[in-house]
Image 1: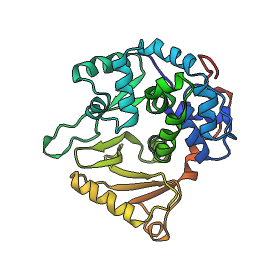
Image 2: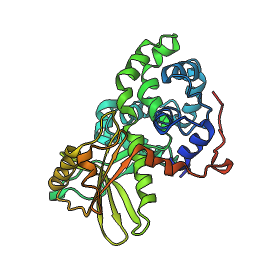
Image 3: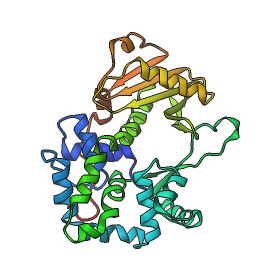
Image 4: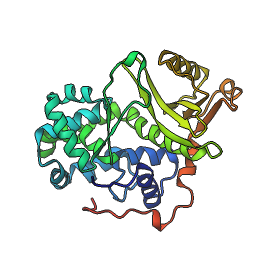
Length: 303
């Protein structure tokens, strides 16, 4: 299986190379262009960069990507299904309009290449309910490409970018949520020093989704939620998280909340051993002590 750098390694390289002015900007642009080793001019808007770096160079980038996908229409449809949905296999099948047998072959091939990784719910759902695994792109840019660029190749080839731009504008606000959640897990692993986290992931079944579920060395269960919005997280976020855990028959020892825009005073007053709060500024710990050794050189063309 091909070995891609970890998401944290890619983020640290991106941060070192492009020196974004703040963490929000870093997450936003990393979500779109991360993992490729390209220089990204963060003084330009995402739409400006999408047009100048990607749409204008569509043919060249597409040709590079098809060296992996072999121009297989089934694989392209399946990858777009993963990128634009909840990443569950059955959901990607519906979106891509392909069969399970076709998908199994594609998954095996893409996992062997390291292009995708497969993730299971950290705990089995109650009542032995079977749930699908989720699939993750090893490189953030590929998720963006197959969500917003690949499905609209016909118009792009003709120089028509309206559909791509409209699609991106409509979904831009929530597209960074996954990267924020993944980086939050990295921060959590770094933060639990006295009782290290030995297992971390997410929980899902047919009715419940819990962003973060982890276990520490001493056996404590940690459950968390991530809120990547312009509104502060308030006590209702904690209430919803506790309700989800109860429905999933989980009894966490510690709750953690991550919020881009901080927390209400009421929620802050409850912070303690059983509730830990992490604002966006805390992610700065992931990009401390950066140096040349963190930079991952671009292997392909520099667009």
